[in-house]
Image (cartoon, rainbow, N blue to C red; front, side):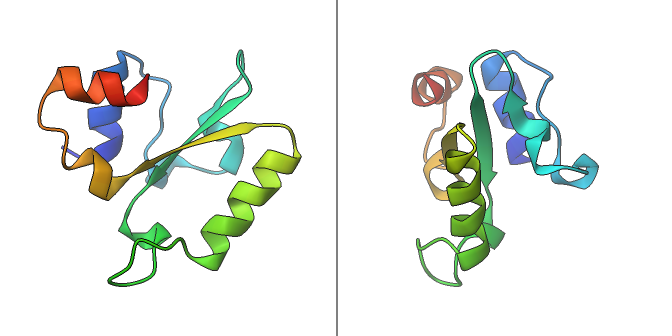
Length: 92
């Protein structure tokens, strides 16, 4: 199961989209709260590092300046959460 599917299962929502279906960076926007949920897979970080790539930092900065609250879910944090309860608590 991919990270996005696990997030959908943990949150009980089908509003998340996989990277393959994204045509626009705002598709992850949670309209009612002005929140963008950014699922940070390995491609968002420099190799062998926990540091975001320049493009990931730029995207975060642009979304923040547009007034959104950006919530990141890094893959290395998610993989440590082995139960649904831990994952729900993390997302809250």
